[in-house]
Amino acid sequence: MDAAAYDRQVNKLKILTVAIPCYNSEAYMEKCIKSLLPAGEDIEILIVDDGSFKDRTAQIADEYQQKYPTIIRAIHQENGGHGEAVNTGIRNASGLYFKVIDSDDWADTKVLLAVIRKLKELEEARGGVDMFLANFIYDKEGAKRKKVMHFRHAFPVDEVFDWSAVHHMKSTQYILMHNIIYRHQVLVDSGLELPKHTFYVDNIFAFQPYPYVHTLYYMDANLYHYFIGREDQSVNEQVMIGRIDQQIRVNKIMIDIMAEQDFNRMDPHVKKVMYVYLDKIMAVTSALLLVSGTKENLEKKREVWSYLRQKSRSMYMHLRFTLVGIILNLPGPVGRKISLLGYKFARKLVGFN
Image 1 (cartoon, helix red, strand yellow):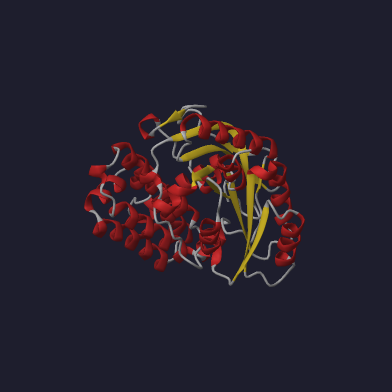
Image 2 (cartoon, rainbow, N blue to C red):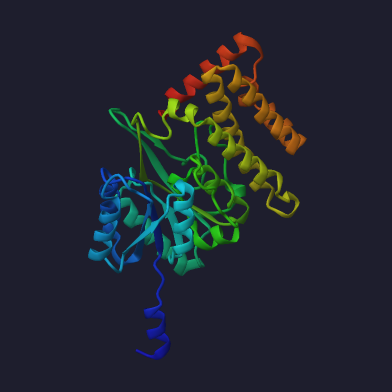
C-alpha cells in the first residue's frame, strides 16, 4: 500500500454520525443504541449525556464506549437541554452525514443498513447529497395501527432531485428531524446553533438549513420509530400547553430565520417549502393556545400573529390567509369552536399526541 492510499485509509471518514441526546434515559437508551450498532464501522454513535443525574445514563454511555471504542463516543456535559445536546453532536461529529435519534426512539436496523449503502453509492457516484430523507413512524404506545409518515407523492423516489421537484405536501405531512439526514457541512454552513433549555428545537434543526440544501434524495423506507404516548413526553398535548412559551420561542425564531433570508438569490422553490413549514408551526402554536382557552393564552396567540406581521407584512399576508390560517383565526367563541374541531380532526388523522 502506497503512502497516499495508507493516508486515505487511516483518515477514512465515517459515512454517518448519529447523535443520541440522553437525559436520565436509562430506561430506554439501550434499545436506541442497539438498533444502530449493526452498522459497524460505517457509523459513529455519539451518546450525549446532557447532565443526567437520576439514573445510570452516564455509566451506560461509558460502558458502551468501552465496549465499542471505534464506533461509540460518550460525551458528558452540563445540562443544556435537547438543543445543546444536538449542538454538541454537531460540533463533535466526524461523519460525512449527520442524524439525530432521540434516546426513546430507535431505528429500523435493516433500513439503516440500506440507507448507509445508498449514502456510500451517492458519495461515489456524484459526491453525495445535501439532504437524505426517509419515512418515520408515529410509534404510539398502545396503538394497534402505527401511522407511517411517507412522502412518495411529494418527492421523487430513489433519485437525486432539487427543491423544484417537490410536489404539494399535505397539511398532515411534516419534514422533521426524524426523517432528515443532513450532510454535516450543510449544518456547519447554515450556522445552526439551537437555543439552550428549550423544547421543540427539532423544528429549527429541520428548518434553518433549507437554503443551504441544493440536492436531495428520498428513500421510501421506514427508518425512524418516533415513540409517542407517554404522559410525561414533550409532545403530549397538555405538556406542550404547559411549555407553550417554549413553543412560541421556537415559532418566533423560525419567523426570524425566514424574515432574514434573501430569497432573490435563492432557488424560488426554497421559499415555497419554508412557507409550508412555517405555516404548520404557526398552526401548531395557534391550536395549542386555543386548546388552552385561557384569556392569557388567547392574547399570546394574537401576539404571535402580530409578531409575524411586524417582522414581515408579506409573510403575514401569505400565512394569515391560507386555509389553515383562516380556520385558526376565526373570530369569537363560535369561531374558536370551529378552529378546535379542525385541530382535533387533524390530530386524529395523523395520530400525534
